[in-house]
Length: 287
Image 1: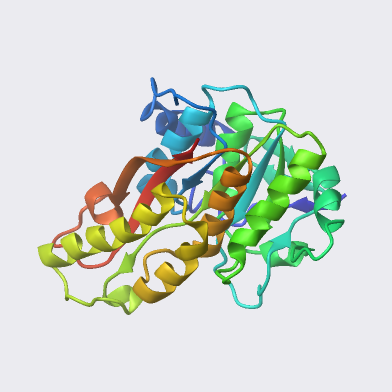
Image 2: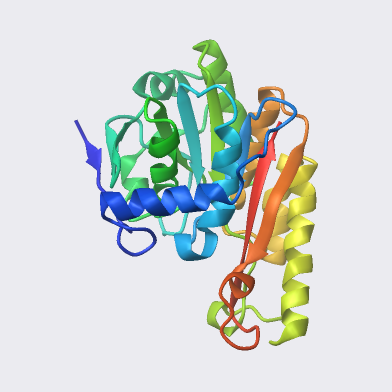
């Protein structure tokens, strides 16, 4: 049985069990008391180091904890490495976390591969060294220790939304109780990222917030087919494919709207002088 070992434990989040669980609990406290009016079918979370984006991600996971635990959580991940040109599953085995191992839903993976004309492949190598899905797993095993997962890396292709619909259809065929979590950070602004249209300073921070809002407007309206083009034109998401797939998945299972639970950026979380290099983060649920 294959085991996917952590790549960024000790960097993006604690590698030791006690410290990891404590930080998960701290991140979840930021959203205690929220309960959605309708069943949550999916969500979007950031994937930076927890000191920056953990409390934002915690708002989505805390909201999910208010409803019946899912059997399987599909994870649509951003792609930060070269060579991953299509939607790629980690279709069997386990993913190790500091809090224990999570089993992959191999039956759902096989059902997806049986779909005629489907574009998803089983390629564990696509997940080697990628952090976007990994940083979500301690939240999942802490809240839903019996759940299985299905990690899928989704590059920002024009057909990324079709990936979400395909996975939702396979889950329905198996009568699975599932939900989907997509991972993406928002605008990467500043000289460090080679993207500073209005320079630096307060005006840059305001411009960045408006740029993030452009994308989030599409997300709330669940316009999955428009997300990738928006991100390509305005550089306001590093995981546009994962966003599009998550929206389409949730829509296929009955969600009709998105709700932004929290939106911030690395400068607001941890200011270090005037605004220069910044990354946006948002927490969204679909119900």
